[in-house]
Length: 368
Image (cartoon, rainbow, N blue to C red; front, side, top):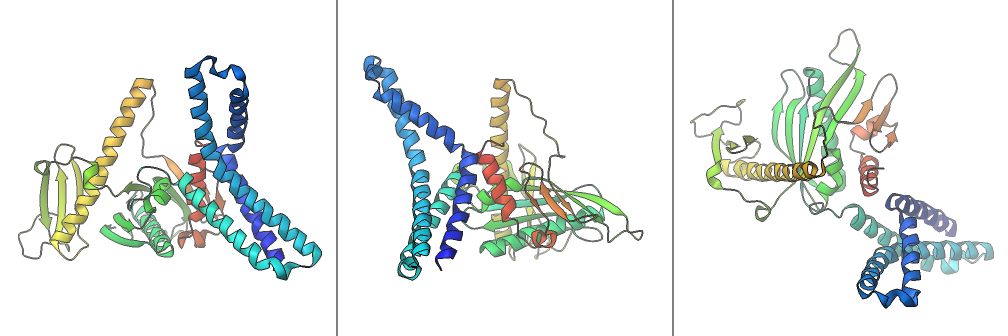
């Protein structure tokens, strides 16, 4: 029905306006008008160097704005034509054409969203997700396990392949640590904002007195790095093997399929024991090691830049990014973006796209 097309066009326009705000497209349009006025001024070429700079900025600005303005016009045209058809009672005659135009506008908007929000150098990469239980014993381990399930369910819903590469069970319940390989285009781009500390507030099922407890778990998300992206000297890696069924330590039995890699210069340790063969575990562990080395390399570069700028930034574990409150009320809130969802069971079942997109839009707007 034409009314459905009007409603969908309104929803897409609202989506577009939200992105416009995050990207500050209005300010860019104002700057474009200023540059066009400068180009129209006959005195511009009195200074050829300045003129070339103005033309270069104008060209780049037009290139970045035109796709957004085009899809905005396309949505506006579809809505106006749909309203006209509805008023004249001619909806059936034009519905198919309007639907095709609306679908084309939706696809273009999604393409622009993707290229704008997921434009980082490694956003299209697979993701390596690590979860660590915080202080709090069994409560924290159970919370880490709940987060693991949440991300596995999200990956499944996205059609991504998720594989638990390593998992250290808790002493009573849950997990102390888990490493998950999530394979699929833009897996890292979507998940990169999940890095940080996740806080749970609930009535503990492990407390006989049914008191409210607060638990923490940290999440780290890294892109899977190609070997060409980082230099790795094989002599710097010490390889240990142990039985997958054991908690660790070296064994000489034939079934020692688990692998531990130690990067001697940095002290970074990675292990994998969930694959069937030692060779497979070693390959997975190597991918995780390269990702961690790449992360360390990027952090060192950032530290140097901040030192040159005279900036200081506290690096501490308590960087809480999101709270999941089960009692006395139900709410999941991202403390960076302000995104809130009251349906806690749905979130814990993997419905976290609202938080993921909220972060991407927030980051695209410079964290404002």
